[in-house]
Amino acid sequence: RRHRAGDILRRRDNLPEPTQAQLVGVIRQTPPGRWESYQFKDKTLIIDGAHNPQKLQALRDSLTAAGIHSVAVLANLTAAPMPKIEAALMVLGPITTHLIIPEFQAGQDIKSRRSLSATQLSVCAQNQGFSSIELQPDITKALQTLLQRPEKTLLITGSLYLVSILRPLVLKLAEKH
Image (cartoon, rainbow, N blue to C red; front, side, top):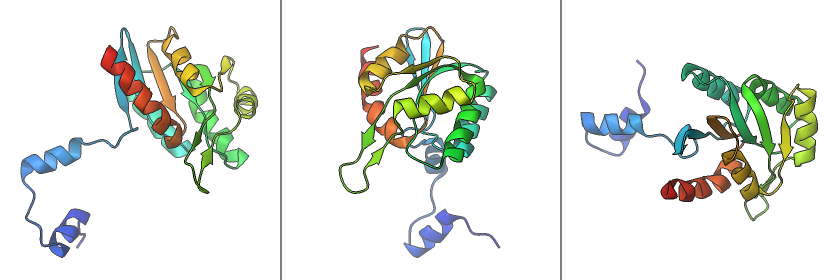
């Protein structure tokens, strides 16, 4: 017999059976940085920290299922083996009308994460067939540039670290709109 994780934890911690309303609430929760959608005038901005080829494919499939086939993208990735970077870009390529590449560093300790250089990712993107690429190493300016794009759907993706830096800026801007 298969056990659900919730059942195991409930028995272990002597918790009551959840109500139907609690179950529905849990099902509707989405972690920050996963398929968050914001309206800015006539544009939709989606934030999703997809950071590897498999997650980017799931994101692309979700966009396609939502009827979205082209987006302006603000993205960068943390250092990884080149085949993984190339595979990630291959997934993004078919839906990307314009790629904006910022640089970022997240964390302040030995586990600090740094993005690829904008130049390095740009060269990889060109090799993968991207034709419209903009290097904007300053992350705040990169967001402003994205929001000024003419595309109706805008996407921030490629790293949960990137999303963790940009999400508070997006939330502040969303409050004003």
